[in-house]
Length: 250
Image (cartoon, rainbow, N blue to C red; front, side, top):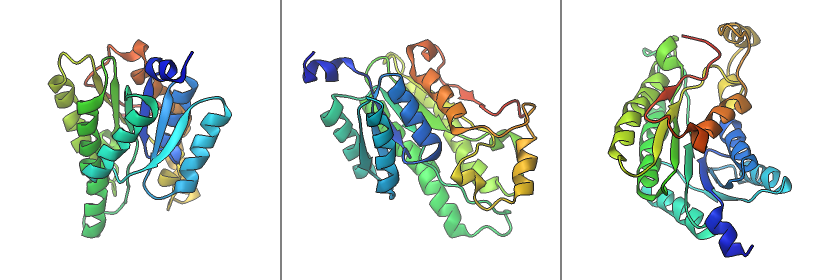
């Protein structure tokens, strides 16, 4: 098989926030499923290259590409690189995100603006590129949070930003009628990532781990498996949905 034939036949994924956590797990899982992967990162090039090395070391194809998801020109360049490197885009996973926890009364509004810029504007910018570029049979997976439902204190601003993601999910799915492209959101519960664990005491982590009936934290691989299903032909009848991957929390 020639390189051009390989590029034409292999499905291609763009994973934002692919340098660590859920994004890294999703990138690796999609590569295991046979996709070429563009691993996007904002700042940590070394971590992104570790993700790429894990994929290529297992025989997959991947490249790391920097971009601020909230900057439309950088996002467009990210997708341009995917098309140049691998021939097109079939799956987009927007795992880039930011979380700052505080009561409403005490939240620094600069932190609010930064979080909403990444979580709302960034999701919208990536969704816009995905809507324009995904090939037939493709999938966009964006990220919400189960806290939209659980309503834990100190999560108001973060949950509000993710509520906006949920609001756009079904609308975009309907806007893409006739394209054979799905749009879904995954809403993880407590998941053992650096972002989740940062700033929490062992007691807080233990309490949150016991909240789901399965009595443990989720893992990035748990969430990546849900992403991989939604991105696969097997999950293509699921469209416009929010999947709460949280071990049985409300």
